[in-house]
Length: 208
Image (cartoon, rainbow, N blue to C red):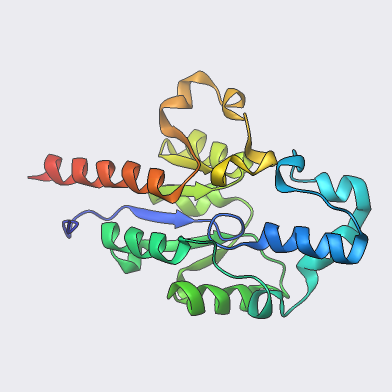
């Protein structure tokens, strides 16, 4: 299926836990360095590790080589990104990720190396809704997805991979009923592909 050229909506993808296996590698590091055997379903808030170990539990994210040497794409992520490109065009598939200054270049190298998305299409910011005004946002964290939906009135996909992410489980009720129609909570790339396929097929039909 070829997207019509006048369809200009962008797809914005989060990086960590949405495309790359960062949280799984973090759990491995926590077990090795701090002797804690936590699993992702146990991490029921984004601050779970900080609440238990303080800042030392987050040192993993400060290693400058982690995105070059340790973090890799989640299974199926590369193919999923290629699917997104087939729907809206390579130039309209972007990554939004919060990054410290020391991590920006490493993340950009990682995204270009594994997903063939240039650095010019990688955006580093917490307030993702501001960047995603003209597109769909796919992210594993409800506090990124919900502001996108509320402010932009656009589709937001909360991705809870195989239902394993404790921090994104059972959050739908936190979004006001008026905005629920813009929310999808999905657990596999295949589910997301189905939603996007229907969306862009619908766009094409409306423009014919």
